Every structure is written in structure tokens, then in C-alpha cells.
Length: 202
Image (cartoon, rainbow, N blue to C red):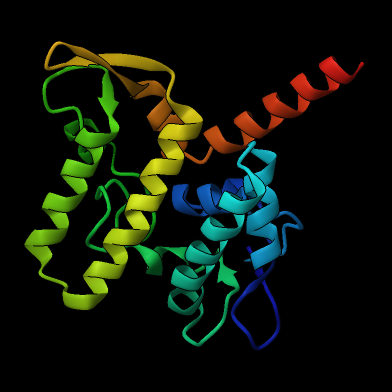
């Protein structure tokens, strides 16, 4: 990965050199300069089919939370290079401190041996981890952020159901969730939506 002179932020990102978390964040880096601006986050959400209002709110939350953490100053622009700095107690623990995917920990998310997960189950893991960390007000902010992430994920990527308490609930399959953490799912969803729109417009 090449870095801009004197700044420590990449001027270009190469997919094979990135960690799993950097590849995941790289979906939002439309111009591939290693930085994710507020308009880029908004546009990336819109390409996934998220509505204008919701995209605006989520883009603000994402960049407001991750901008200062990844760049070390007050900014709404996120550094893809330093995205691992955004790993916080209220997450799944799937990414290690370097932003690499911990496959063994990923497998522990599926506690009942099932091949799918509901949003409530995912949030249960996140909240349990966060409460153990006792992170104070920063933890509260991280919890709100992770809650918004989970809602967005299941809105976009639920591909199956799971029976809980005798009722079928939306769920995401283990394979699809793995693709999400590998940084493969969001580009694929955006590409599929673009192809469908072209087919319908043609």
C-alpha cells in the first residue's frame, strides 16, 4: 500500500494488500484514495438501495464515529488504512486489533450450532461483550453505532429465516455473514442491484 507524503494515509489502495476490515471499509471508498468522505458513505449506501433520508442519517453516524477515531482529529473523513482503530468493545470480536478476520471467533457467533443468525442473536453477542468491557460513555456511543450497523446489515442482507420461540424471524446465513466480514458482500449486493436496474430499464 502506498502512502501520501507526510500524512500516513494511502493515496491508493490495492485489494490484495488489505486486511479483511480494510476491504470491508474499502467498499465505501469510491475513488480508491484510501479515505472515505461523508458523500462517499452516503453514495455507497444509496448504491445498496438505502433510502435518501436513512442514508443521510447513517452516513452521518458512520463518519462522525469513525472519522476522529481513524484519523486522530476532529474530521468526518475516515481513513481506510487505520480503520482497525475503530474496533470497539461493542462489536462481535470477529476482527482482531489489526483488522484481520478471526475465523475461530466468527464460528462462536453461532452458539446453537445453526448455520444462520438473527439480528437479536447478533446484538446479544455484541451487548454482552460491550458490558463486560465497562467502557462508560464511549461504550454507550459504540453501542449505538453497532446497533445501527446491525439494523442496516439485516435490512440489506437477510437471506433466510430462523424459527425462534415458534416464530420465523429474518436471519442471515453463516456463509453470507462470512462474506460480509471478508469485505465481499456489500460490493456484490451493489453490483447485483445495478444489474437488476439495468435489466429493468432495458
